[in-house]
Image 1 (cartoon, one colour):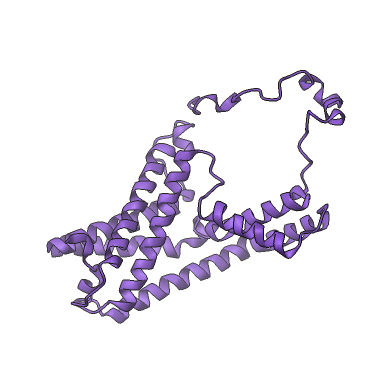
Image 2 (tube, one colour):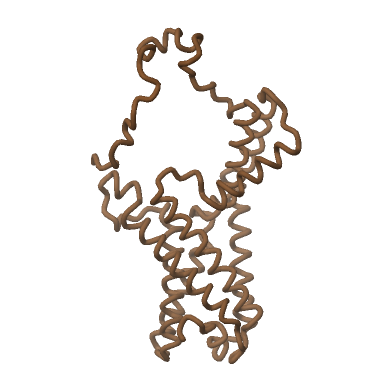
Length: 282
């Protein structure tokens, strides 16, 4: 069966397992190096820690260890595992498909390359199934996002084939998983020439994906959990990232301010507003 075959053990007939393992380690090293360079270039880590320290000093109430632990758990459960920052349900589902698919794909790749790389090795069915499932999930979520959800296409009327540098991550991610999937299927079918072509494309796409961290959004995924955690901390300790407290029209002091005069008699719930319809005004 195609989806239960370990493509890397079949590949070991022509490429030694040690070479594949070194390649995986190099890709990991590229991600680490690219992320560090990204931090140095954009000074994102410096900004994050300085902003966190500033917010801590501005906090109205200190948080104890139990409260910080609770915030960390909520951040992982909601912001990381469920991508709660996406209000659009379609965008969230597409993101979750891509995120979990990519995780499945990476974990299964490491398992098959490092533990079952030999030709004819009996690989547990779970790993190739997880690898193919992960690649399919990335393709479904990624192409759904690319053709139907992207803001500059859906709301601004740009053609779907318009490409900018910010698209490097999603395109290289899609190419890596799509070419890997096609390579595996062709390899299982015995199409040696075509499978070799897609193997080369798979390798090139993965080099761009993992080697292009400095120029793509790849490093962004490492900062999102930290930023989400800090945002929850700022809300809990009252510092609110140095932003003013939202006006509360049930509070007489807020309601009677000069700047609130036009809203004094307006209903508290004024409907959906701009969320009443999808953004299609290009």
